[in-house]
Amino acid sequence: TPSIPDHNGRTPVMAYDLACPVEMRKDTRIKVDTEKNEAYCPNCGSRFDIFANYGSPLSGKAAELGYGLQKYHVGAGAAGEYMVITRK
Image 1 (cartoon, rainbow, N blue to C red):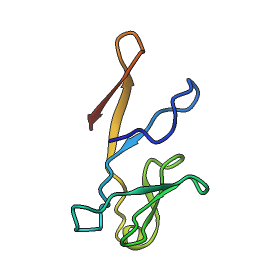
Image 2: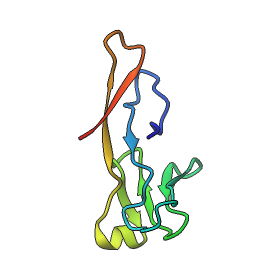
Image 3: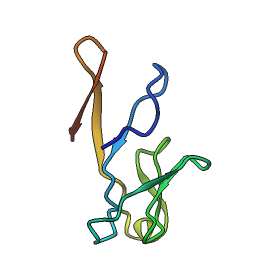
Image 4: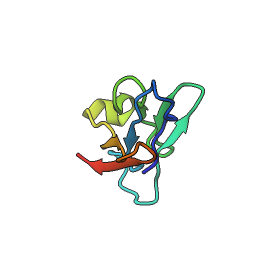
């Protein structure tokens, strides 16, 4: 699970599962639209807010059903040199 934004000390690092909460195919992975700062499913077309609203659905089938992206807890390591990502 990659963290989406770069950690620069000001922006909180967020991480999400790459699986679409709507799509049943296991080989489907969420992509990031860097121009719109949104994530999207290339199969069902659902779009997600990954910077301001913690993976909340914006449009598509996921928005109709109220399914957001699975969030992960991200924290600094003991000396701050790495990130610890765990499922909440």
